[in-house]
Length: 314
Image (cartoon, rainbow, N blue to C red; front, side, top):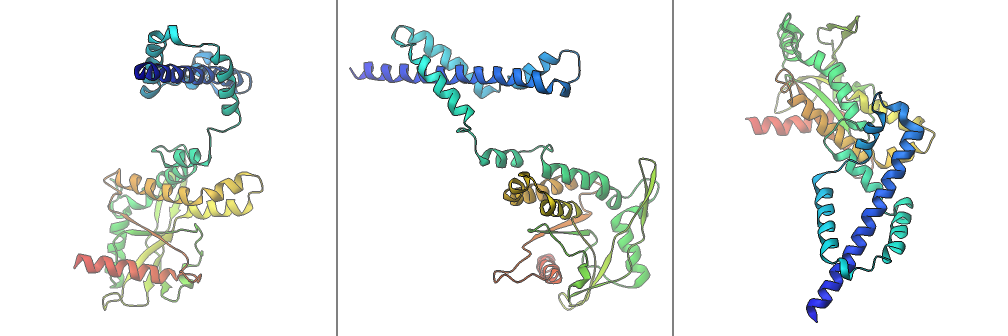
């Protein structure tokens, strides 16, 4: 009797699984038709139908195993299955899919966290790296002095000063907003910039500048200089969130923390992916406000960060 009950439970589960698979196939067929009717111009001919089919019916190993298991169960329990239940279960599954019952904001979060550059954060990090950082950080074959480390050493020798880091320090506040006047900090004083770098970008001669600041408070009993700037893509993203008037603004604000962290981790990954940039920049992710709600002085962030770092190095 126990075995019979187990078999009944398995056969019922088989009916439900089959209903779910049939509903999913119907849903995918509808998506394929919708894609063909409204978005076929997004595909390059020839074989547009094939391209749509492969995109819509993408099957991974997990889905394939479920299909195989379902077929095996159908064959084994065929005589005990009440296939009329499919007439009721399939429509219910379709309604659940159409109503968004199986979707949530977590799906968007999971998409952002995945390792790809198709999301907003990954795109910003890629543009920032390939459009700017790679050109100001790395030394070229023809001119070694174009590298950030070499330009810092040259500045240090010419002005008889010491730098707290021989890298470009990039500030990443958790709010994504950074005061454009970094020297408004009581602890930082702007000085002459590093020697600019001139690079040809798509036929346009571009001049890249990197600002230098004097840290007014000593770190481990010594005064230092620093090459410092904010992550400009995040500032642009922050501005866009303030001006956006459609529904995407709310969605972007809810995802702000996820986008920030993905930008930070993906940018770090890009910097480490090339030998000529892996030791040329330092990212500082920090909270822009204290626990009491008051703003954090950027200078305090710098001093605290490098105080701990220099302590560990000595």
